Image (cartoon, rainbow, N blue to C red; front, side):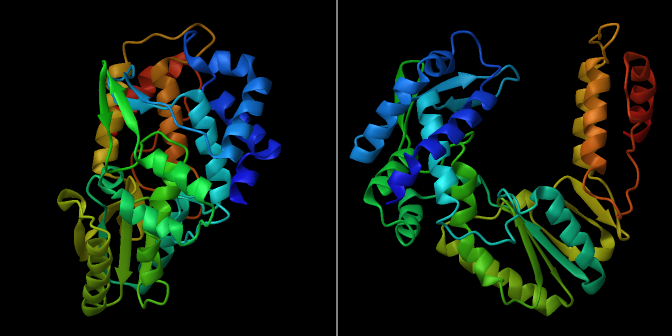
Amino acid sequence: MLINRIASDAVLNQAYEWLCHRRKDYGANADVWNFRRNWQAAKARLRADLIAGTYRFDVLDRVTLKDGSIISLWSSRDALVLKAMTLCLEAVLPVSTTCTHIRGHGGAKEAIRQVHANLPKNAHVFRTDVKSYYASIEHQLLLDRLAAHVSDWTVMSLLSQYMRRTICDGGNFIDIEQGISLGCPLSPLMAAFFLHELDQAFEQSEVFYVRFMDDSLILAPTRWKLRRAVATLNGVLSELRLEKHPDKTYVGRIARGFDFLGYHFVDGALRAAHKTTRKMYETAVRLYEQKGHRDNPTPLGQYLTRWNAWFRGGLSGIELRGAFLPALEGSNSTETGEKKQAASG
């Protein structure tokens, strides 16, 4: 049974290592430290509850992060169980290779490489994403589709609990009746699986199709083929009761250029999309006043180095234009990097 694999020593230990890494910087009052201190006893209880079908997810806490964003936080115990479920469900649920955000499918850079390679064969482009994708997924639609692949009722019960969760917000308890959880290890897999019907619809298509999470892109050689592909996409989204984001939907000729996953495709080359560059510049300005230590780069230098590595990384052999930043290695490089970035901004 699937629940036995989820509750096995190997899977629980792998999930535990993931949890320790993900929460290593949590504060002293976080529950992860007590959980780690009593791991062996906690693992025995977890295994017994999972196999008996008596495991219950706790109420999530709504917390505000340093950057002002608000998230709903799973307890360490629940996060570990959700990771263990993810590790086992990855081998059970069908996910197309055209969905690149799943582990082993290449990530965003694989999607970028595929799009670039298919530009010469096509003339028209359509890209879109789903409006409030995670929040829009209807629980019953997802559960019905999961039931076709997961026969273990104990695991289906856990999946139902994961979706129909309760959040504590300042003493107020909120029951979530639609949507899946952000910041949860299981959610990327659920998001990939829920749109599997869309991926299947393009398996034998005459157009090029790729997806990263809910960002979908279609390339077509002719306008009528593109129209037919867009009609197919609209039909699947309608069946899943999802809507395209009106501000993030684009259709046009490839020659005019288009944005996808933070890059702008134009004349067979890549540059950072305007929105990406603007966000980077705003962050650089905010970090400019922060000082580094004698032997360490400034926060601005560290940030620009990471940004540059992201911009170039995984795209060897593809022409990159504009927004190049130096490999900043020390605080003395900060002023140079800031001036170059100001020029590119």
